[in-house]
Image (cartoon, rainbow, N blue to C red; front, side, top):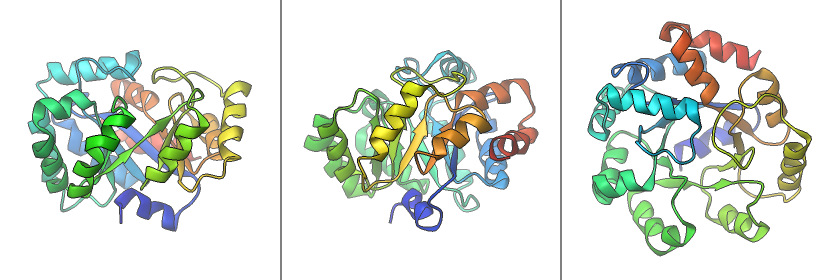
Length: 255
């Protein structure tokens, strides 16, 4: 069974996932951040693969990605870092990247490296559904890898139901039709969207991301989904604080 889905079998509510960019703030921080997040008790960790053109990401994550690349990060180094903690890390890891990264690296090589690192879940926001159905579903199935699909307020009911059928871990419910980044309070328009999706009674677990930044927005998101993902707010925290203080950030979300 998929490692992330296994979490939901034991904990169906208040799931907390944290996103960070590999190789940021410093090249060697990747493994330290994972270790600190694991100690702080997050449910799963989303590791961002730095990319020169991260279409789904806002200024904060774009900046962290740029700085990670300036630090010298690349996919080979990311995989080396993840391999180094494979036997000690017990918190499921999810890789978030872009289709071109996999194409450039080599599809089979990319999948093989993921599996070698003990990872079985990826998020590729720009992977077209038709490409998934015609090629990548078979490829991922061959390696035991699960792809996480994103839905937005504009996603049609037909597509949502199709995504629900394909989902093996969770559906990433984008809180708004925009790029990543902290946006303050959750609006009534977003709540209407959350309600609409909740009333569809989907089979899959739902995790809300994009704009979740503190205890208030996290708690509100958890009223309509199984949990939430926090990214930009954590990146900002890393930029302003010591990596050793990560537990303070997580506690501030869970309080």
